[in-house]
Image 1 (cartoon, rainbow, N blue to C red):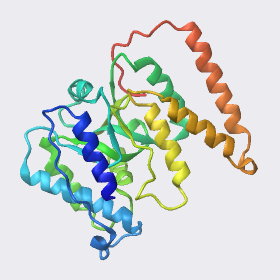
Image 2 (image 1 turned 90 degrees about the vertical axis):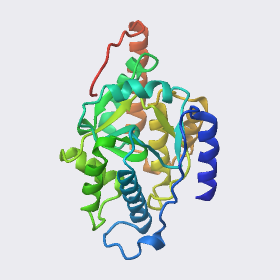
Image 3 (image 1 turned 60 degrees about the vertical axis):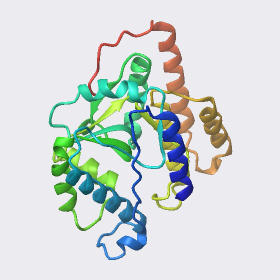
Image 4 (image 1 turned 135 degrees about the horizontal axis):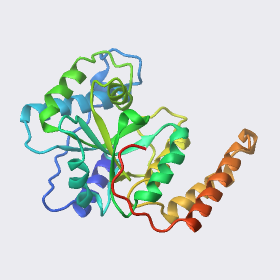
Length: 274
């Protein structure tokens, strides 16, 4: 954890604009939440409690501008600071949380996002109402300063921790308790590192979702990520394959190739939703 925090400090210093300042918050550990009730794992409780405590501190401080909260696996991109004002200007006045990057958990939503990414990337960023998509992850998000007190109340009311923090926020957005949005293509990205919060045994699945998230950012695909995915596919246990992965992969690639031949560079005037 200390190494990841140090990495992010160095990364922030190199990538953030001069006007941005970094305040480092010491996250809670499982030892800090040993008496907190709930069914989730101790590391997930510590994550939830850390975000809740930070939101409480920010609410007491009363910032004039939206605080930008990062976890230590967040990646700032060259386009982040330039696209952020336009993204925030699209949001309604009563927005609560504005994500700059989320993990998409539903396979059924991924083809639509790939299509939207091709239309938007390099042209403009859209604001997507998160009631329209299932997502995970709290690596980078802003909070409406006028709604910090409201968010603090919602988190303080949740004393028994039965859901990880990102799942809880998603549920609150789904139930219209909070208004959550994400910029798309994502304005920030993720480090391809093993999570310190996720349950053991989920490492490959988590890393695959991370790569998809990275590819859906304003930076798009990288050659390194493509090589990693191809290597993972080559090494996959063939006994677990049903053939659908290869089938769907070929169909998607063929469809994208055909559309690339038919379609001129898109003229996009703004899109809300997926």
